[in-house]
Length: 293
Length: 293
Image (tube, rainbow over all chains, first blue to last red; front, side, top):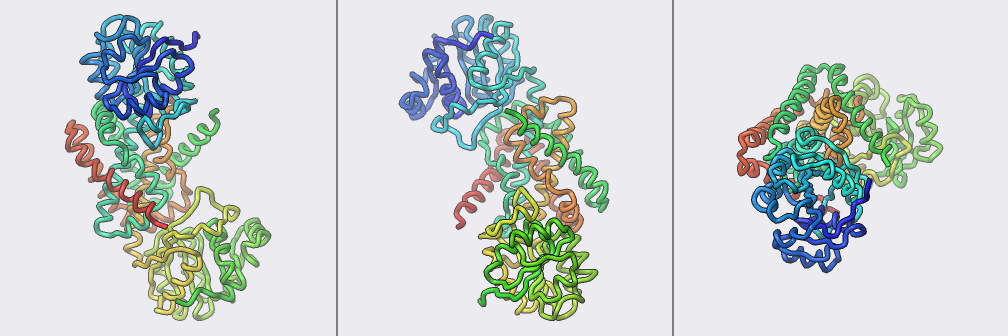
């Protein structure tokens, strides 16, 4: 495969993800341009050589780009695609987004002018901290980067997108958008909702008895972490993946109801039979993770 | 308060918790005795000076003790209290357990012979690893250690138990057993069940699509950790705290149902209104934790 090379790459959205991408692309791009509405973010990114130049003008920022990356929350990406960007791009510009849900984004990408080479993307990486100041050239290293085809993905588009992902040091995984959205509903969006509902339950107990907060320890710490995620980002995600999330919630309730029935019935053996495969699945997954490079 | 001093302390159960306790008590006890059924565990504990001597004979191990600590799973503790230990102890021996649920244990402690000074205990600490090899003298440092009174807790018993907890470097928190069990149902047992049900749901998806396992990342890692806990230990905990856990499950389902209704109804604003207090409660709790010494 031809390695990724570009004269100009424009990254729309200079947060942790966009900034880290800029750092990772340094070696294979002549000019890196950032588009961001926040003047402090732009100034920081230029001062720290994360990008070569930055603007708040989307049209000017993308006009001369060989590749444009949309690194913003899902609904901002959809808005940018629907309302403006198609007419600003040169023909054959590679357009990739990194939104957390893919069906809606890939759908609007499919309505872009013919000639735009558009692919949906979702890198499975992140950090506790956000913002351009947290940018890290290794953020994408060895992490899965999902690529989802759109009606504007030609065979050439696909090869360019694969090369782009490898330039980041990430591992491309290709699948259609619906499949992606179902998978992340299970491993990411359902866990978020459970974490939030758990914290709401514990907080309600904590109102009556402060000992709840004083005794909460490592188990609660892990299980409550996702509840602190950014509400705007999560609102976009849940709002654009409602069907898959609702399906997973229904499946989760079935699992919970079975455990509950055995618990209340004091059927210790059947309860253990239900909990054992979950224990083994978690242990197997950790082994698999550790076996990875 | 008089500091804790003892001629002989016997620890029944030389796992991570019992071994760490022995290490922490070194300075204020003349002789540390361990009771454990596993000869390899006993040999390790004696060789590494965790205890001075070890036996598998409960009667012999506790006969000369000033204080006895039951450091075993909940139902083993109950079994030891109900079947044997009362008649082996000298009068005025301090008896503390460290089981994860307290109502059943404190109840059977209340039926011990008058003269046994029995208190229920639950240190809120632990490690990913288990076993005497993982013993750590600082395991209890600055961690909450719940003490629950029983019918065999005299005012003198209470003072000795408080001194014992401080000797470990832990922070004593006194409350009745029912309150303790409700609190830990919320912060520990409910989270475990949610983690297990989540892993069961994800594993069921993973059977149809291996991408589930390939894409699972940090969020799933945190939310699935508790599912790997020891089944025997968790079976004892759930079996001796069924009512409180079932109550918390019912309260959790209410929180989940409200989130789900707003999600499916695409009522973004009300959904955010539900998720916001959970986010803030988690952030407040983390701040509170960090403010601690």
